Length: 146
Image 1 (cartoon, rainbow, N blue to C red):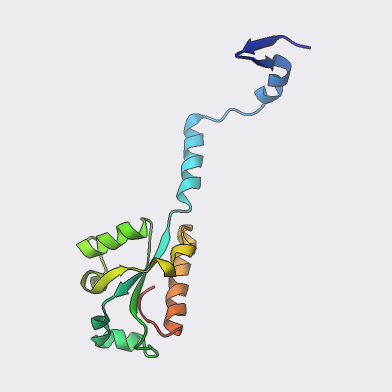
Image 2: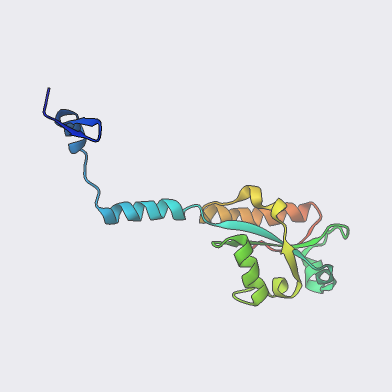
């Protein structure tokens, strides 16, 4: 057959190794770039924040939601490259925050968005709009989602 090398009870044949030797060698930097792109593609999230009912007293909010059901809660729909919990705390601390969430944000509503995440950026931007439209059509008072 061919020469064999024994290493810790495994036997490797140079003949069998020859077929793998013909494969192109991928440089470490290229491999890291490919892995980083693959990992980063699915890190965007949509999220839904429960808002205090006092936000419904705002004239602009009522005008944006003419078919709202007063029995359903007021919510904010957003999209982020961070984890939704981390983004919510940024809102509450005023860091790159939507004014409405800073003032009226109560908590996240994971039951409304957990099943959708994570996703690529393009899908997240589209999903944010569609989720806001669907919830508005169901009678929720929806802010954000643009």
